[in-house]
Length: 408
Length: 160
Image (cartoon, rainbow over all chains, first blue to last red):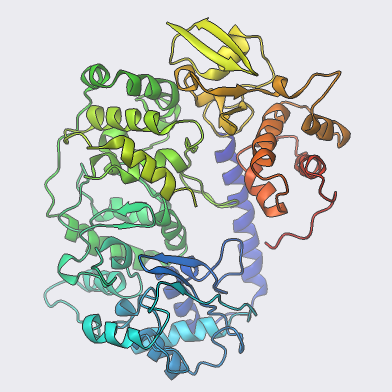
């Protein structure tokens, strides 16, 4: 409650500050405004900002199966940023993954998505980024397993996996649907997390948006394979993307929480178009039964039932204060219905914490409160009580792994 | 149900419902009133104690889950006559106004400094982030934590 009140108060102050800022800042050109919107739809700042660092100044470590690369400084600083990039050089980086000096960029930079972006949109993004304040900040060198530190090898990777092509609208679909498809496939680069990657790190296009493991989380399918109990509608998805809260599905956790905070500030119509497109892709899924097998689950997992009663029920049980606030009931919770327990375990371990000063769904972290064995008992109970899915196998090992993966 | 809890180094055999929050057991059964009930939802930190050295919200920890683990409350750090180092630092900096949050703040700081005796200012702020003070004595609390860690009273500027 306290935190909600604080968020509202901060929200008010932020709105006031924004209003003052707008009043004092000279009006930006429509092209720059367009670029700013695209940067939010593409979540550029999410990767290109270090923790507590200056926005767009880079330095955030991006874990890959092959080591770490660091997102670059994309402020217009001439020495350490993109200050010397011409518009054509910037477009080449976005469309083809080539740095200003001709070196290959690592595909952790999702140019395989941006390749489909229109020239006008790339120009707008360039105008926006080049108009920002330059920040001098060197980007750390990649820390990759040999021989991947040798950038020309990326040329081989590209020959195998990179197929540049502009986005092509689907005939017979509405303009809004096609707009959403464009944003999802290009700037939004949803597939970078939600599509499984092959042995050499490339997205498996045949499994586009099938769901994938990423940074200790499972990014669920955004197509007919969705494990959601209730079918996603465009309205429900729009609300989720803008607020991080889907009352009939889940709260956005992990990296998705950051995505929703960016989308909250993007143009409404653009986010709605993405929702329209993705909701239709997910519409093929059959709704699953919602269940609440309380006594059955308690008999099978008595320890888990007690932990739930003491730690979770005050917020998650029907009639609790949080449920009256419109939080998703666990019986509809998407993570509990996923084939892998990773998201459930990660959410219990880490909770949901909006960054200081930001609003968003909140849940306290239980990583210090529960042992791995207790975490496993609790997850087994939740799965048995709130879903009709088979029990998760090997939960104690999964709990240990999840704790290691969420330790950073 | 009988449950044995190790609190401040002493084993206590208790007859309690295993789902009872640890906070209620500490206050009602053991008379340890340092940890406070604030929100009951894990959002304010007034109930913070350490379990196996880590700070937890005792309002959300079922007593059952604390069985066999090492629980320390603010009473375990020292007494009014002989306060522990962190308690002494809070006292010297006059960090308490109404004092309701302070036992939780001290235990959160204890867990932080035990794990990281010389934290940076950013680490102190991130470490104390889960605990709220409605009086607004945060700057004094931060000074007290720096004092307990033997750090300069005023930190190097934190980059926003």
